[in-house]
Length: 99
Image 1 (spheres, rainbow, N blue to C red):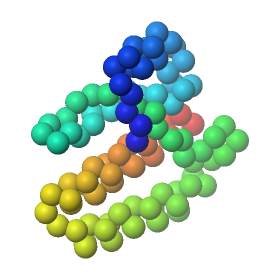
Image 2: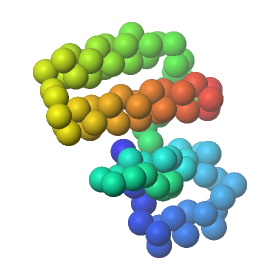
Image 3: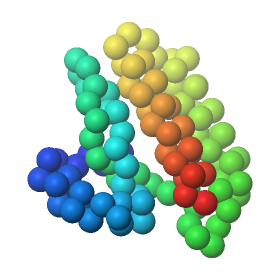
Image 4: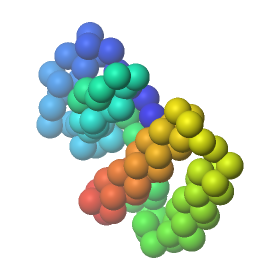
């Protein structure tokens, strides 16, 4: 995940109509104590020539690896795994929306 600093956010929001094209979105980012909305740049699962369904197997495999990590992790580090899984699912859903 790429978080943009406030100055970069201001510049990007000047081009609000292009935000969808630039794969920018506002995401509720978990922080150490709480969470805050930030403009993020996220990867796309498929480009205009590809199909999102082509990547379903890879997506499921990635989630499987994350679940294996969850089984070997405890304590405060487990939250990082949960946050990663949540973000990957979010990116997947956004990719489906763009298609």
